[in-house]
Image 1 (cartoon, rainbow, N blue to C red):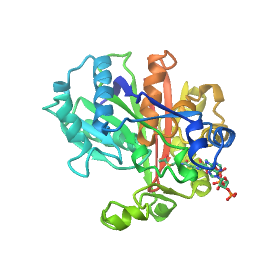
Image 2 (image 1 turned 180 degrees about the horizontal axis):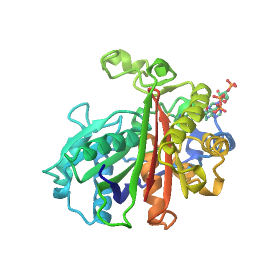
Image 3 (image 1 turned 120 degrees about the vertical axis):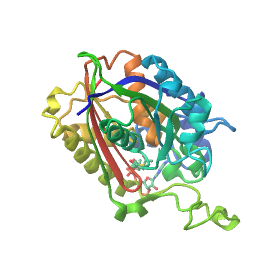
Image 4 (image 1 turned 90 degrees about the vertical axis):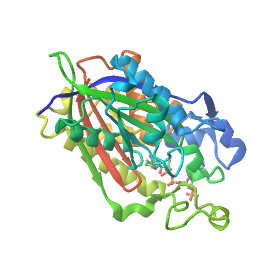
Length: 328
Ligand code: ACO
């Protein structure tokens, strides 16, 4: 079995800051409600005209720079997203074009929030069979385009962002290792969190837009319960089989949807809160981007160092869930 490692990380966070006070002025909510129920103080959103690839391309360049590789070295690009630049082609092809990564095959994985972990799992298979050696995995999302700014139940939760990692084959003893990836789907529960309009079931029409079907619909409190249970299961599965225990984990990166979900998962898994990486207070829920952006920030701030053992878990629309364990 080939040893696969993370050679570089990168992220792009939009400049536009949207504080909770914005929503106090537009819907029936309060700073106190948002912070106490979600832990979110502000989030970032793209400017008009900025597309997904405009965030994912600089994030990828930073990851390549850390890895010491050029775009031409890549042989595979996988993008975890449900908000590509266009309905077609894929975000992967747009990013390949903008990077000039002519030697890479590129495609998207639509698995909502765990899209980045799904991307890692797919990349791992391609690398284990020896067919691909240098792989860019991206988690990126512009959820603000799918957010109903009249719906207080959802509009306060989301933000935009992009994160990326470059995977390669470990050559030296001190290189890290992608130890396990576990991914799951439960389509029976799709109605609890979905975007009904714009696909083949409710194609684009004036009527569909008038009914606001192109926006996220979520039964928040039901999603909450499933999120906690599924993230724990995915994280535990990622640990099982690695021969490692949760006490050996240096850092835990849960999907940054809600501080209460993150703390409940860490508490039930008996992971000390000091080991939990948190960005939800400043970026909100950026869906597939939460884990790679949090990873990159923790690496660049010196929290996560080479040799550290990192566990990450995510949950989202589908339902989907995923866990990943790696030594950085
Ligand atoms: N401001 C003020 N009140 C609000 C707001 C708001 N922004 N939003 C909802 N409320 C109200 C509701 O209307 C409800 O009022 P009612 O009792 O009069 O009907 C009350 O607050 C309680 O609503 P709940 O939904 O029970 O509140 P809860 O404590 O569950 O918090 C939240 C809501 C934050 C959405 C929470 O359920 C949650 O985080 N759910 C999980 C979301 C999630 O994890 N998604 C992850 C996957 S999706 C993805 O990542 C893309």
